[in-house]
Length: 363
Image (cartoon, rainbow, N blue to C red; front, side):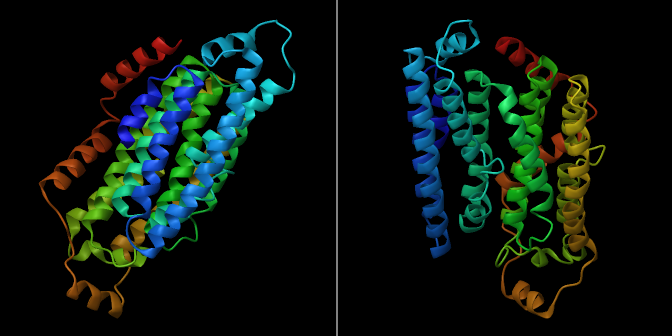
């Protein structure tokens, strides 16, 4: 139902179907997140409350736009917004602002990210993978389709880059760290959309494609390793008895940090290049600065994998529990994602061509 809701969202052409599609996968996620321990129930309740708040803001914004434009089809409202007609100077900007805030909640873009680390920590890891990938694809396609004023997105870009860089520096749990990492990545994706040019939109889609691959790979690795409380120290010294597993983990982390020659570097490079072409020099230097800071916690995790010794408690825990939960599906998925991460930098032509065709369809 989550995937079906996202497909409905992508194919929607009016505000009513968009709202119903968003609510479809939001309610499904509330049920999926709440299944499990008491922490899962708490995470599900937080997701439900803030999801209801964002849905209310979205519905109120849609009501303002439909009231001004007299139609539920957003193509007509966009035409009215860009025309010279005398429309309300208050209702339409406020309507767009409320819709952007609601979508920022769904994408956990700062400063509307407060629910994401808690939900990531409390929800089952399999559901976190779904939450980290599927809604972002649907909501990002919605941002492209409805033609929001791109100037309003710059605040979300700057806050997401800053929060994603600083928020994970003192984290001790893997899922909370990945939540803040996702916030930083969403800042890069949103920046390509904020520039509004053909090259920046293409770069943003490429970054989204690479981000999805890296997220699936890193969470597959976390699911394969039978952690006790999802603490970073539980991965300490992993390279001594699982060297291939640790090398794969290290490659994915370096790619998420944007270190060449992995795919994550290519994603950041094309977004930064599009920012330079759009003459957004301040955001360019700010994004580079935040990327350098964010690289600290990725390298710290690699240090834990390869150079930190196990504590006595962790040794006893690992002896009493099975270390890995690997099957053919996980091995195939990790291998396929790792192949893209390793070789996408050297052969990106096919993906660039396909994404350029998508962007030309938008323009």
